[in-house]
Amino acid sequence: MGPRDPAFWQDFWPGFWANFVADLLVGIVIAGAISWLIAKSKKIDATVTGHLRAAGPDFELRLSLRNTGKVSFKSQEIYFHILVNNTLGPTEREGKTIRSPATPGDTEYSDFGGLLERPLFPGRTTDLCTLRLKSDNIGAKNLLYFLSTAYGFFPKGIKQTEEGIIGATELGLVTLRRS
Image (cartoon, rainbow, N blue to C red):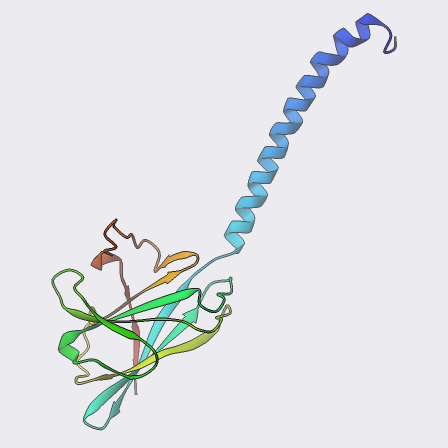
């Protein structure tokens, strides 16, 4: 029985197509599993922390960004927004931020936003800006943040409407240290 025998081809084609389809399905499953594992290994996350200290009659708040994920951010891949409750009397002391009014929910905030001009590697921290505050009576929702990056918004779960509005409930809370 060889390729010239008609019975060979009658047995060959059904077996060929069955093996081809089975190999294709196994290949798709393996490629999907590898893609999922690679995506999981590239955890992307970042948080904002603040260090508050007395500076004369006012208070100084130094804000930093920490890359808590496993992926490096290139320069100019992060645009940060720091929202400070207006009752604290915030003004910029150091940094290159753009101040604009923001009203997430019913509270008026000052949004200090800016583009991070340098890369941020996993496990590293970099300074964002330093703000001057008139009060150190900082409540839980007085310092908020969100980041717009090449990989999406942070903290996770932030959604933006078609008008560009971001909900107040999804914003991150700045972790605060005092000295």
